Image (cartoon, rainbow, N blue to C red; front, top):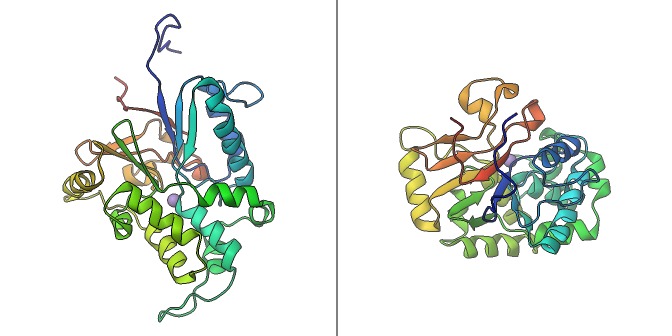
Length: 276
Ligand SMILES: [Mn+2]
């Protein structure tokens, strides 16, 4: 066990990010406790820390609603000590909300029958999460952003450039998604789910260039994303993952430890400095 800071040294406000929790409330609470961000009762104890979640609270794991409830509570508590907790939407929030709103209504399409209900079932949808959704959850979720610029980092759930289909600035894109989530346009909702389910835009030989162009348009000096499990990108087992994955010439940081496949709940400080 290594002491990383002395209590007598006053740090600037710390910024942490957390990726895809997928219903694993107990693991999230334990990880937050280990970082000193919550106390034994899982109440905020992070002081002035800023904590951003990158979405995908639900599906695949047992207690998505419990995760949302915990995060919503921390959002309320953190400002009392000068801190801040907030979250982006992930594709699984879109899926859960789409399921809630449209159920098995067929999506207008030339490619055969599609519906949120079918996608929800094959992507780990949990009936208990649908049953537990309250108007308070719906209001909070549908007003979250999909992108955020925080301390010179561009936070996003999915490692995809498809966000640019909604606009050319972070504000435009967030506003466009907020508008579609307030609408009853099944086609737009479906397109949102489809876009945010794509991945790997920053991989491969062009990855660095694509990431640089993306940052040029939207701002920030490093992209931070969840959505794509680090172990899959490195070809190792999820349980072997210990740190976020920096790639594309350092322009991109993947932080999804793969909780739902047995990986760790990574809580990553920004800027990320690899352990020596
Ligand atoms: Mn995802």
